[in-house]
Length: 126
Image 1 (cartoon, rainbow, N blue to C red):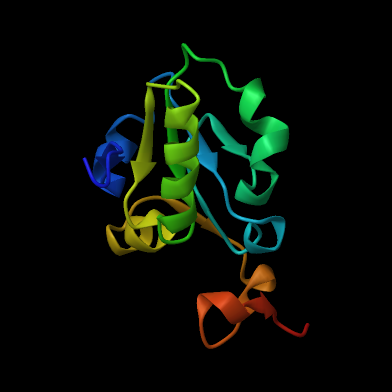
Image 2 (cartoon, rainbow, N blue to C red):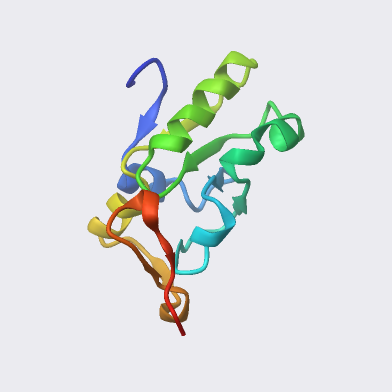
């Protein structure tokens, strides 16, 4: 638990990837092309559109939320917890930690981003 929400390491999350759990990537669309975790039951629901999609999640399903580093996904989990969802977790460290643990990734170098920090990422010139 961290800040009142249940957190999993990327390795713990990966161990659950062959179950019926859903992995929810909450990154914005422009961040999706370069690196994606390679698991079944992967869905994309951008954090910025939370109010549009939150009511579409089924309460009895299990979900692991993640983003690039685990910050926006933690916010999403807190909001869902406040709405009564209980079978939810945040993946600590996001895709950055997933890659550091050498877990399966799909990488498309044509979608690589440039920028000096996360707040300044933009597509590379092709």
